[in-house]
Length: 477
Image (cartoon, rainbow, N blue to C red; front, top):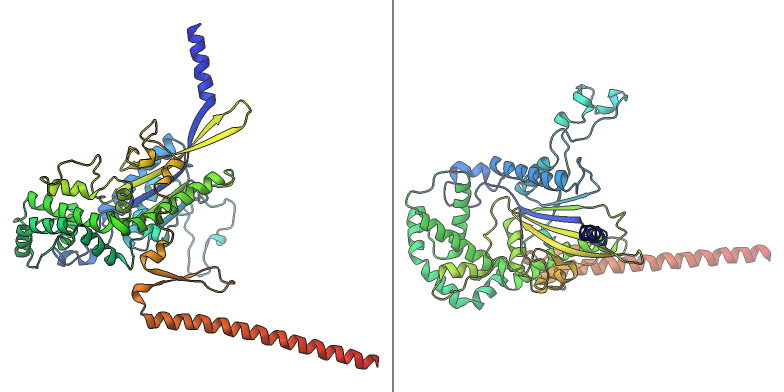
């Protein structure tokens, strides 16, 4: 009897509550790249300056394979073959991010899963108009060798703040942050005086602040990732201090203050819009299931810092332990090459006695393959499961951080005439007051010209009508 009752309750529970994954947004850093600065080991790597290296390609290919295993083979969330109606793929306009996305997509949809040609059609339809082109028969009617599927990757511009850290007012915000923590900043600079001197001697360049060490570590990190030789004079302790210097600069530049508020607002608005569009739409016609954003370490740092997973205090705890004695709850490392952050939107069905479906939605976050506890987010602290947060609660802390990120960032928007559906975004940093005035005068001049033209045309039409009316009167007379 007890067993039967238990099974009955279990079945009722299954019918009462069921949940499924409905949307995914993935944001990742490009793979291993060449160095960006002419500091060390430059001559031999100039051709790879900022470019994705073979190791970086492989990193994202392997990441794509793992995502295929999880979301296609195990969860059956995505189809076995690429479906363009299910994907939106964006990248910053850099070779390394575009190629990283392409490599990951090849892992997600590997060879032998691409499209096939239609059978029983004359081969001439598959050839370009160039008469020298020769038909090559491939196996199994595959469109491309190895049945490869070239999946499109769309690039965004620097004004698209959801995937950009190009902010004209960035330096101003950095100086503000530095001023707020000036005493701490000075303490850190004093702490690094011996390393400034040592690095200046090793690399034959002047190093006088942690911002310069940040650039140095970026170069050395690229060198380490390729297992290239480092200067023998540098100890492991030196490298650890260089990393902490880079972390310190990352946090005061991107992870705190006004800059983080503005930049995180843009990306969170982007995420919320995608999820809310699904929730509010006819879900049978809202087909996009996976949004992929290929970006940089800055993109991940901005998000993770805004959600309290990265913190300046994590770095200060290691640099100034006598002052900062309490370690923050979570201190994620600065994103490595090919680090990935995934937002999952889950839909929960709760069936009522009236047969009306009630839906609840919740968020889960996965970083570098592991789900993150969401109780660091203030509005998610009362959830029963620390790895889940109701969507409405999740957006309380991240919504409307900035009403106009473009304006606060230093861009202005000029509305075009109504027959144009785009608006021009102008970088104020690169435009002088004279340039802006001339541009505004041009817009006003065009508007006045259009108004005068329309007025003239209207007067001419009235004049013609009067002439026709007079002619008709003359005929009747």
